Amino acid sequence: MSQKIIIQEAPFRMQDEYQKLKSVTRAVGAVAIFVGVVRDINDGADVHGLHLEHYPGMTEREIGKILAMAEDRWPLHAATVIHRVGALDPGDEIVLVGIAAGHRGDAFAACEFVIDYLKTRATFWKKEQTSEGEGWLTTREADLSAAATWEE
Amino acid sequence: MVKIVFFASIREVLGCASLDLNIGKGVSLSRLVAMLGEQRGELWCVALTAENVRVAVNQELVQGDPLLSIGDEIAFFPPVTGG
Image 1 (cartoon, chains in turn red, blue):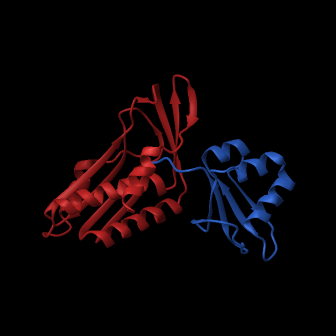
Image 2 (tube, rainbow over the protein chains, first blue to last red):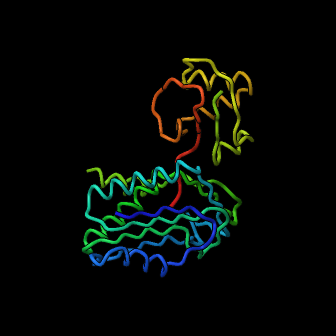
């Protein structure tokens, strides 16, 4: 499986990533892409912006481990994870997970698996600016249970 | 010497992103935290032993109270919130 892990401040172009994923081999029959977007509301407060920081080095290693687990579970041809850091505004794309596989079932499942694990294991932290001030986000129960369902 | 790094809310509370510390052989993680508390004050002890603090040694999450080695990079951070 070819894999690409990038942490960057700059925006990404989904179309470019799709073209690369589908061109890895002619055996690709399905590409699933998840894109996470910054909401303008969270827990009832208006969100003006986000600041994202990460642990350079460890972040890439953790994402690498998640992709290796995905490759063990499903037959995949390629995987791409791009995560943005720094200042982001509502409406900005924050993360892209792209999976190329022979068949759609494997692509869908692996894509969901990777984003579920990324949210609970990859070393990123979000600080939110809202109408009520700014503060670091805490882990959502829903994210923990989403990742836990893969271990059942 | 070990390198100690702090992220997110912990970095902000401590007002410190990283520091180097001289330690001898066979120093445990809990001893390291106690040393930081002695040198830097009670706030450090409280912030680094809070229930939800995660610790990584050489960029691998650790549990319990491992022994540290010269040259290790020890990271303290809150639960992750990316994606």
